[in-house]
Length: 403
Ligand SMILES: *[C@@H]1O[C@H](CO)[C@@H](O)[C@H](O)[C@H]1NC(C)=O
Ligand SMILES: *[C@@H]1O[C@H](CO)[C@@H](O)[C@H](O)[C@H]1NC(C)=O
Ligand SMILES: *[C@@H]1O[C@H](CO)[C@@H](O)[C@H](O)[C@H]1NC(C)=O
Ligand SMILES: *[C@@H]1O[C@H](CO)[C@@H](O)[C@H](O)[C@H]1NC(C)=O
Ligand SMILES: *[C@@H]1O[C@H](CO)[C@@H](O)[C@H](O)[C@H]1NC(C)=O
Ligand SMILES: CC(=O)N[C@H]1CO[C@H](CO)[C@@H](O)[C@@H]1O
Image (cartoon, rainbow, N blue to C red; front, side, top):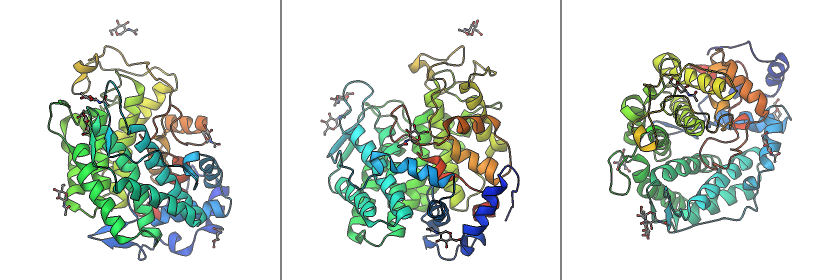
C-alpha cells in the first residue's frame, strides 16, 4: 500500500484514524462480492468508497458531510422524486425534438442519487425509489434512436448502471427477475447504440471525440454490471486504440482534440476518460490513469488553466475526427463555454493528487472555486459523474491507495 501523507490537512488525517473502520484501514477486500472475476459494487464506487462516504457523513466529517447535505438538497435525491418517464422510445436528435431524452437523463440521475442516499442514510425509501425507476424503465423502454442516440444511451446508461450496481450489491430488496429485466435493457437497448462504431444512415459519424469516449466509458461500466468480460475489455481496448476517441486525442501538452470547438465538449471528454480509468482501476486494471505518462492529467490541467482565464499554447494542426462537420479545424482555442466548469475535476484530483501525491494546481483552483462539486450548473444533467466531492474525495493512506 502506498501511503501519501502530504497535501492533506492533518486534521482530516487524524479524524480519519478515528472513524475509518479497521477493515477499510487495512485494505481488507475479502467481503467484496466477486462474480466472473469482477469486484462488486465496482463501477465508480467500491464498497470501501461507499463506506468512506457513509462514515464521513455519519461522523459529520468534511468534505463528505457538507457535500452530502448539498446533495440531499437536490430534488433528484429525494425519495419522493416523481418519475418523468418511462417511455417506450427515447430519441435524441441534433435538430428538432428529442422526446424522452431529458426525462431519461433526470430519472437515471435520480436513481443514482437515491442509491447514494440509501447507502449513506440507510433509509429504505431511497432504495425503493431507485428500484421503482429501474423497473419502470426496464419494463417499458424498447428503443433508443435518433442522430445522437449514441450519446444519450452512453451517458444515461452509465448513470443507470452506477446506481444499479450500488442497489444490487448493498440492498436485498431488488428482486432477481427485475434485475434480469434491467440487465436485458442494458444489453439490448443501451449497449447497441452506445457501442456502435460503424456508420448508419441516421448517424454517419459515430464514436468520434466525446461521443467515442462516452461510449468507451459506458461499455466498460456495462461490462462490469453485466459481468461480461468481453464487453469490459472491448471498452478498454477502444480507449487505447480507437483513433478518433483514444487517449491520444489529448496531445503532449494537454490540448484536447476539441479545444478549438468549445470548452464544454472538451470537459465532457475528459470526464468520460476519468470515469473509464477509475472503473478499470477499481477492477484491478491499474494502468489506465497512467497511460502515456499520465496524459489525462496533463489534459485536465491544460483545460483547467485555460478555463480559469489563462493563456495556453495551442496547436491548430491538432483536432478531432470530423472537425470539418463542426466548423473546424479551428485556428484558435475556443472561448465558447470558457469557465463553465463541469463536475469532472474531483475524480481525477482524487487519483492523481490525493492517492498518487502528484500536483494538479489548476484543477485544485477549480475545486476551490466550486467549493463543492455538485451536478452540472449548465443543465447537462446526466453527462458527467456528478457529486464528485461526496463520491470521490479521499484522504491520505486510505485503502484505495493499495496499488
Ligand atoms: C463513526 O465512526 C465510527 C468509527 O470510529 C463508526 O464505528 C461509526 O459507525 C461512525 N458513525 C456513524 C454514524 O457512521
Ligand atoms: C450544492 O453546491 C453547488 C455548488 O457549490 C451549488 O450550486 C448548489 O446550489 C448546492 N445545492 C444545494 C441544494 O445547496
Ligand atoms: C429525429 O430526426 C429524424 C431524422 O433524422 C426524424 O425522422 C425524426 O422524426 C426526428 N424525431 C423527432 C422527434 O423530431
Ligand atoms: C425513432 O423511433 C420512433 C418509434 O419507432 C420513430 O417514430 C422515429 O421516427 C424514430 N426516429 C429516428 C430518428 O429513427
Ligand atoms: C458480452 O458482450 C459482448 C459484446 O462485447 C456481446 O457480444 C455478448 O453477447 C455479451 N455476452 C452475453 C452473455 O451477454
Ligand atoms: C481571435 C484570435 O485570437 N484570432 C487569432 C486566431 O489565430 C490566428 C492564426 O494564429 C491569428 O492570426 C488570429 O489573430
